[in-house]
Length: 74
Image 1 (cartoon, helix red, strand yellow):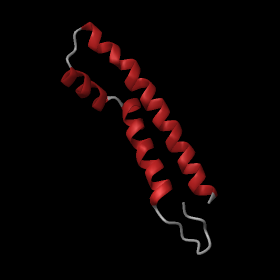
Image 2 (cartoon, rainbow, N blue to C red; image 1 turned 30 degrees about the vertical axis):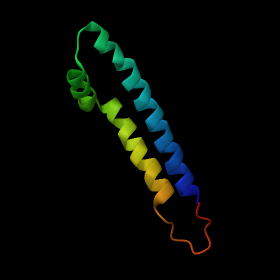
Image 3 (cartoon, rainbow, N blue to C red; image 1 turned 90 degrees about the vertical axis):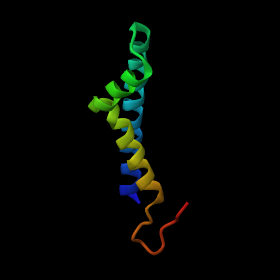
């Protein structure tokens, strides 16, 4: 149970950090980038990919059943 909470919080932190970078890089659209160039730039940045890794960690922490017989599943 503690491991699930740990992975959930790590995933949440990664999602927040990646989301902040993705939103801050929206300023590229104001200097002349089009949307496809923006998405191409976002895909190549490691700090933006942490948002997707965080979403995967959160999903795994919530939906993968635990090995304990009496663990409460939400």
